[in-house]
Amino acid sequence: MSSASRPGADLAETPEVWLREHPELASRLVFRHAAARFAELDPRIVFLEADLGGGADPFESRHPGRYFNLGICEATLVDVACGMARVGHVVIAHSFAPFGVMRACEQVRLGMAYGRANVKLVCDYGGVAGAFFGPTHHAVEDLAILRAMPGMTVVSPMDGLETVQATRAMLQHDGPVYLRLGRNRVTRHDVPRGPFELGRAQCLREGEDVGLLAHGEVGVAVALESARLLEARGVSARVLNVHTLKPLDEAAVLETAERTRLLVTVEEHNVLGGLGGAVCETVGAVGLGRRVVRVGLQDRYDATAGSHESLLAGHGLEGAQVAERVLSALPRPRMAAVGPVTRRS
Amino acid sequence: MIPLSANASQLERRARRVRRLILRLAATPSGCHLGGSLSVVELLVVLLGEVMRVDPRAPLSPARDHLILSKGHAAAGMYAALAEFGFLDAEELVRRYNAEGSPYTGHVNAAVPGVEFATGSLGHGLGLGVGLTLGHQLKGEPNRTFVVCGDGEMGEGSNWEALQVAAHHRLSALTLVVDRNGGQNDGPTESILSQAALARRLEAFGFQTAEVDGHDLTALSAALRESGGERPRALVAHTQKGAGVPMLRGKGPHYAVFSPEHLRRALASVGEEAS
Image 1 (cartoon, chains in turn red, brown):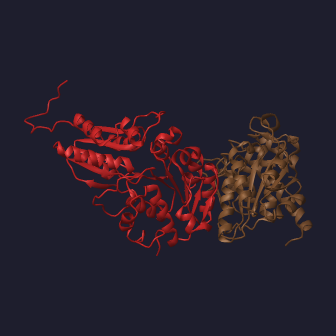
Image 2 (image 1 turned 90 degrees about the vertical axis):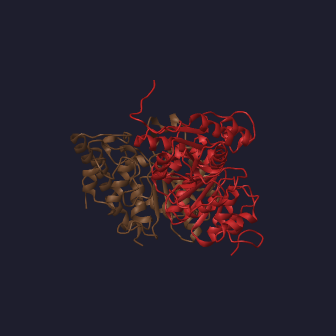
């Protein structure tokens, strides 16, 4: 049993306690500790890096023989990962989201998705978390691209604990997985949550007026904040954490649509093709007539420097902004009908 | 091990049978990438028949050596060679090549026994082969990996990434063979994107490099058995796109759909299927 350099809780056994002992860690670093810990339990796990490990990686220091920094070559990183998986290794390949997904896109498509490789592509810098580094280091399109690849599992955890859970689940899952992380310190949510299961959304808060569907470090935090603000305004919000974008938990999405009067997706991703797209596809196919408001990155690149928070605010990704959009979009509760409902034109 | 000389005439017969089978695939309704399939015949026959540890009854045996035909458009050549060595049935291959519901797609399909990865989008095979070799090296296993690229394919930048990684990690169980047939989709490689200094570049990248006549069974056999010592090995195999089919005068078309008459003449020019 070992977790970090100092004695303490075991990340594998009591991740909640371990996380309390390491309050400073962003999810992308929590992931590295989790991978290092789970690799002690499964000798098949190897870790490939394309020179964005940042140094002092816990996996590298604890499993130096199973850690390879291949250099700055993301395309080869993914092909090598698929080759190693073919001979029985469980391979983690890490890069930043713009490079791991888009520089190596065809390797991901052919080797991982079509080849059904047991490779876990883990990318941080999802969305605009790279903020002042500029759009070269942002990824506003990654989820749309990977959702369209048959056979991919696409996961975007909301906080440190869910990152540990998702890391364990993806390593136990036989097949290609994309794990999308941010960059910065994130809120660790003190909400009741059931056991984590890939492809199974979690209701974090019950409500009847609006359904807020969210994923990831920013999306869920903004959704929960707007739900609290809405409550003060007399509007009750159901918050569904859709940590797995693919396979999508369609039953949970439809259940939320049926229990509420408005659906709002909240995510740090282009409003095209991510969770917003997935929810529209799902709800539209059933024909519930439920409106879907998509809160997310506004189909543009942010070419000026700024903090993560200011960039998000520029796209309407703040709790107060989302609450206002909900209030303006929420249909009035239907009055007890006396005879047929007539539509005004 | 079977003495080389005794085996050479048998390999020659096998090469002729593979060639005849490729010509028959060119006469199926949608044809095949003929030139680049014919140029790798001797290479595949020597690898599968003499150099590699493979077992058609257990194509996924953990003890197997690996063959990646990165130039996956030469699927007809790959499938024909696999049929010659008992991985698949030759008559079924001819009947179902490119046909509805068949695994025998026009670019190499991983669903076919003996195939490790789907290839044909160029510039992936070497990286995948580096991964196989690194994976075995990490487990202390001796399995060798052979990757066959086209010379035109060396235009893909991903190959040069993978070469660096292979050299850096001293993947001595990896052998890259470049099928230097001098042609690519739109014409002669030298007039499109020159690979004139290929062997010197591979050597400079850290590969133990040799050049070989890619249609000389004896020379290929010796060159492919040898490994690069502590370095990965690269062979530049000089070949011709229409090799072994005199009717094509060494100028095999990149792609061909043969009529029955074409096929009859081509088979006649290759010679009988002597046993």
